[in-house]
Amino acid sequence: QVQLVESGGGSVQSGGSLRLSCAASGSTISSYCMGWFRQAPGKEREGVAAIDRDGDNRNAESVKGRFTISRDNAQNTVYLQMDSLKPEDTAIYYCAADVYCDHDFGYWGQGTQVTVSS
Image (cartoon, rainbow, N blue to C red):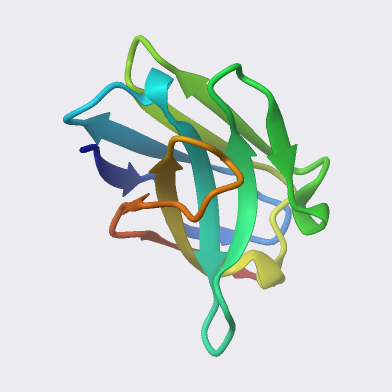
């Protein structure tokens, strides 16, 4: 099993940047597809970005060109670089892991709050 802990959330003004980190323990992330999800108040959880074991990544249309997912297998950490943030990016952001990107993710972190003010 893998345990995930997110960090790096906070409050930022519109147009600003944040970098989220997801530190894994218990297993190496090189064995997993890693993803970032978010959930805003009153809305369903949505996928933001994912990166598979080969390093290929995919982003939601709403964040393309602004967010970048990356992984450092040596540090057992996944990152989400978020630039040009908008108020609609405000949400709790969750890191997740599973063997395949197309499966329901089975391992989740506790989440980190991101708040973007206009």
